[in-house]
Every structure is written in structure tokens, then in C-alpha cells.
Picture (cartoon, rainbow, N blue to C red):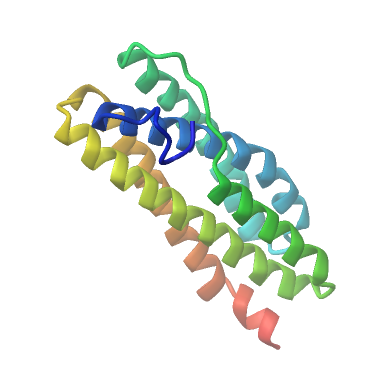
Length: 169
């Protein structure tokens, strides 16, 4: 089912498609994070990414609950946006030899992913509320809050923990 395919006829269909999109995205992120963790040389950055990997697994569990509450089987649908962000992150990382510059790139690439997720969860919450699916809003809101916190931690790593400063020197 494509984003604007004939299979999406109602707002409920659109919500389900959005949930399948973020479900796929979260699963792809769990595959991409270990590589980023291995590449990171800044201890705070690597630790933050490890913690977010654990959070991402919990987010997938919450999405499983969302699908269950909607009476749907948890499934993903291809998400060209997340695939593109991960592909770009891998391409950028493969071009950088200086490890401190690589750390700065990892922060930037991880933030691009976080911003995508924040946008997606915000939209899904709005749609779920509009459709009266109050039983799933709290799961989605918890995921959104974790994504916002992960983004803030990446900012801290870049700005206060010296990732950008070290890369610039």
C-alpha cells in the first residue's frame, strides 16, 4: 500500500498506514543503531545511542499494543523516508576518516531520524485523537516523548559533551 494508493480511503486507513510506516521505521532503526554505536568514539554519544536502542525496542512493543487495541496485526510497510535517512547516514559515515568528525556526523544523522519520528508520532497522535482512539494515544505519546528526549540528548552530546568542539578542532 503506497501513501496515496487506492487502499487508503478513510482516515482510519490513513492512521493504519501511518502506524505501519512508523512500525517499519522503528524496526529499521533497531538494525541501524548498532552500527552507529560501533562507529561512535565519544563515550557519551555511544552510551546515549545504546540507551535509545533499548527505548526503540520498547517503542516497538508499544506499537504492538496499539495494533492489538485496533484489532490489527502488527505489520510494517516500506518507508522510503527512513530508508533514505539510513542510507544517507551510512554513505556519509563511509566517507569520513576523522573519528571526531564521524561522531559529529552520527549526531546529525541520528537527529534527522529523530526529527522524522517526532513528526510522524505527532501526526499519528492528532489523527488518533480526531478518530476517538483515546486508548492508543498514551502509547504514541510515550513514544513521542522518548523521541523528543533522545533528540535533546543528542543536542547535549553535540554541544555540551564536546562532540562538535572536538570535530571542529
